[in-house]
Image 1 (cartoon, rainbow over the protein chains, first blue to last red):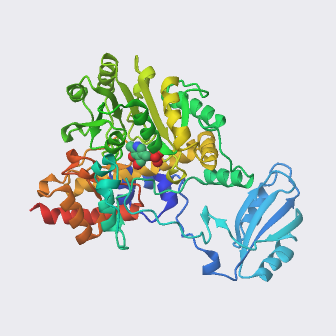
Image 2: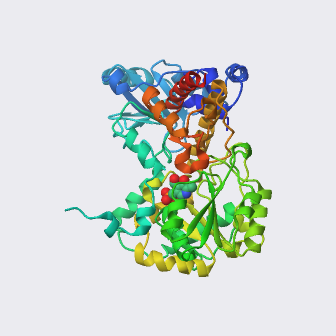
Length: 159
Length: 392
Ligand SMILES: Cc1ncc(COP(=O)(O)O)c(C=O)c1O
């Protein structure tokens, strides 16, 4: 387990100096390690985690189960990569079980996603079927809980 | 007409002074702008799997008394944990007593051991309950000061100098609240030899033993030659598993001692709450991962605090355990009390004055780093500013 990455995953806005302080290391040392992790692709990027229900309450998210016809040689890879290339596809995973790909799609509203599924995704060669599930409410996303009840105040001084 | 305390209150109670922590607590209370490094407990809630186990237990209707000793399944889980973690073997049927926190276990142990006038040696600065618990059991508290030049670790020679024919018990607490100090194995061995030589019982409060940093080692004195038969091993769930509010702990000791403590416990407490006992079983079965995550968070904050103390020029030794730092503020010429009060007034930061843990803590502050990194950073900026202003 990389301590530095664990801390960064909790809060990527900490400065190298702040990270160094928590780790008991030199800031320059942290800078060097992060540069190396970025260079070798372990760190793919840094992004803000938004509460979508505040930021874009009308946005829609769908999880789409997709069944594919495997191809000789490449298996699912070629088709899966084609599906993953659409910008509205936020995540795309090959799954074990009853279907092959789990595709997570975001759109401005439900209709936009419906259009993407019926006109684009399901008409692609090699796609056997799709099943679309719309997300209704978020309780936890990115490891963070939505609207948690306020925490009890602790005593300010205790033995 | 109100009661005359002189006439109606027990002498024993009248003699016990108000706790210094409570005095300070009242100063802080009612101010909502304060950043507090004054707590003595984790800033985490108990891990969810533990809370969930407690809820499930309530759903199943588990709301009864348990055996006086505590649920056998919990005692068995404790026997396994103590064996694995401390290399100590206790019989869950007769040598483990589940208590309402280590607090109750300390009280039981002293009441079980002491006759009026018996002396108990404790090291100081220390957890606030030791001295009064000894006194409430009609014992005589004998403080041995630990010294800043030893990073507040205990020296066997100082213990030896305090032993008299009346010494019946020694209570040890490493890692220590309030200093974070740990003890050298050599010193522990020498103290064990003293205990055997003088036929003294040792209470070992190891409540912070999981919270150690930078490879600090921990040995339970009960593992040393001749010690298991004369040690009351005290441990609980409050710190490592962040379960302070569950009020659950335990004592492991030879059967005669367990029986003696049990005699008091069965009449004064009957048993520890069953919900907390069930939660404790869950903590022992599946709590290692979450506990290690919390320990790691404390380790990061400890680094932060030590860096900031060094930057501010405030001397502070690197504590091996617990979640406290004990910086030295003697260069300001202020007493701990004055420093803490003025720090609260001028900078709205609460740290507990070191002498709340015994006179030998004067000149120091207890800073608890079980707090968010944001508040630790802000608190350290303010403490640094205050220190600079008062040092010249
Ligand atoms: C050294 C020490 N022993 C015992 C206790 C009491 O713990 P419990 O919550 O198990 O009663 C504390 C709590 O602060 C402590 O610091």
